Length: 230
Image 1 (tube, rainbow, N blue to C red):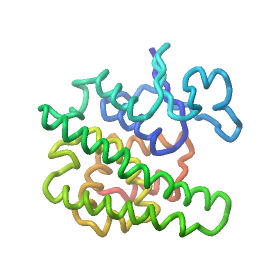
Image 2: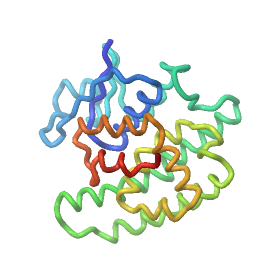
Image 3: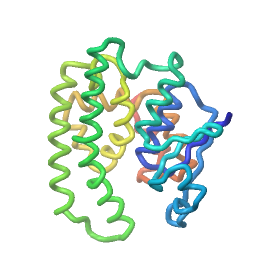
Image 4: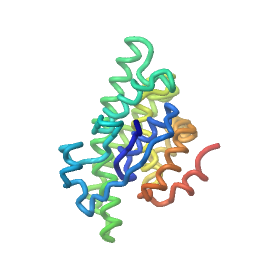
């Protein structure tokens, strides 16, 4: 059964391709969804995802939406082919759950409107609304301060092992680095953590795959790849 990932070059779609690549699954098809053309309103699309959002994962007759759910499915389906993303003890699993909640709510609830203001402002060729940006920037700064403290004690957010938390946040960190890199670069342990995520082979392959989706950021995937740590 062929695997298809429907989406566009957004951080939540990148989570799915990154997860597949971390588990050595490279035989999949990226299908670009043209949201501006209203493709997400078509009955064929809403039958797969009633919320009309991307990404959608397809494997034969099986369809799944919500990027974090897709990542967990991939990790379970291909268990043993890649990293153990959830920890090996009950306590490790609990810490992974804890940081997963922090990534989804403490980080993403601020990151999404903050980054959206940049993209919409650029698309509409208008000045950025600092009234929108500053409160979310401040919350992101606080989040990264907390990460800095945690990462002074552990290699990754949930411990000394690469977990689903690191995988889920990695594409978002890439966008932070292109928009306000000082949020990462001024924090020694956060920068070391980002470099370790960005240097993973699957992360590099994810960027190469994004060429298909017409990567939405400036610089381009090729330029980002050249700038990544060796």
